Image 1 (tube, rainbow, N blue to C red):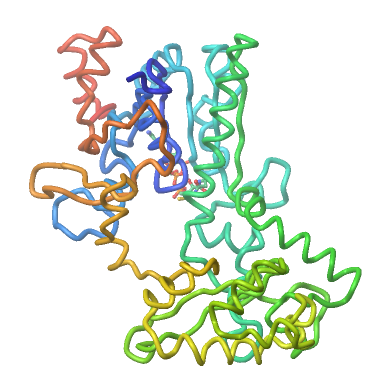
Image 2 (cartoon, helix red, strand yellow):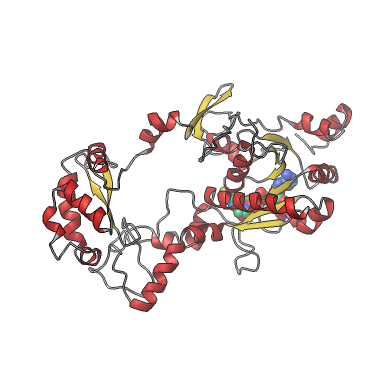
Length: 423
Ligand SMILES: CC(C)(COP(=O)(O)OP(=O)(O)OC[C@H]1O[C@@H](n2cnc3c(N)ncnc32)[C@H](O)[C@@H]1OP(=O)(O)O)[C@@H](O)C(=O)NCCC(=O)NCCS
């Protein structure tokens, strides 16, 4: 079994979630990832949301499996020398420090390119270079807000009509995955040119890219003054920008989230059902639900007519779903060709028998007091490769191995410790 990135060396100065989610994938693809952490605590997530006192947090563990940890104060001359030596051997150098920090340390793209012209450098920031927000620090919700996700998520009327965060890490892990795409493409490019390039990924861009259909909707609204496929249509007036979409599907199919029989006691006893726009899909839906009369009823027989009568449709479908549990509805309608899915909560996902078997949710043997923990594995599969999932490193666990590899003697390593260059 040959790991796709076997032999590739990554010097990783990323922290928190966005950058580490990217380098986690690089490590799972087989690259050697050396995570550089500040002496005196390391990645801030190590000590965030602690569930076991004195142990690295689940937040850290989930994002740093299969990596090596080197503590290094890269603001000291000795630390800069070590980082320079690491970059000389690296295929990729990545960072997501606050805007300007890596340049202030002397490791901006121009310097890195001079140190090792073959090395690909990647920076992940909140906003693009040249943006009026270029210097602004960013966390997840900042990106969701500035990337068009928050403005379009949530309810479109009443007291809940406020910008809303998605539970998915659109700003963090999504940006990490975009970053990953850029870096992998840069590796392929380097095979042709022999030279590394600079990959820059902003969190705002990653969110905008996932929200691309909202720009489609905005232009339709600009032209037509309405969006018939939005949940608020035809019941509310449109303004100059697209409203929040609530649970509408987002295309010309009619999708909605329906209550199931235990919704009053179980906040996730809901099911999502899509009525397809194609005639065949609509027929399958009508036959599955026993709504054969809808096939010829002018209120429902075309996608356009269905947009005009959404609330009647929602009510009729819910009269069916509310008598059953979400799994029952999914099984019944799914078997009859209707696109349908239960709303799964995180207790259900954590224990899901399929996902725990097929490598989606994996159990890492961390050892020590932690024992084991669960995380999300590589989200795609290869026909000829399965990652070997390893535990996350403790702070500075690989100091000696890495520094010895660079030619440092035991005495020099001890001196670096005394000088607080490493911890
Ligand atoms: C996440 C973020 C908001 C945190 O900002 P921050 O609190 O200023 O923390 P940073 O780690 O970036 O920088 C703190 C300092 O540590 C320094 N530092 C980082 N690693 C170091 C190391 N190994 N050795 C010495 N100093 C180090 C930085 O140079 C910086 O010094 P400065 O303040 O004198 O310039 C910011 O890094 C950011 O906006 N990053 C880009 C977007 C991003 O990825 N966000 C995270 C989403 S999960």
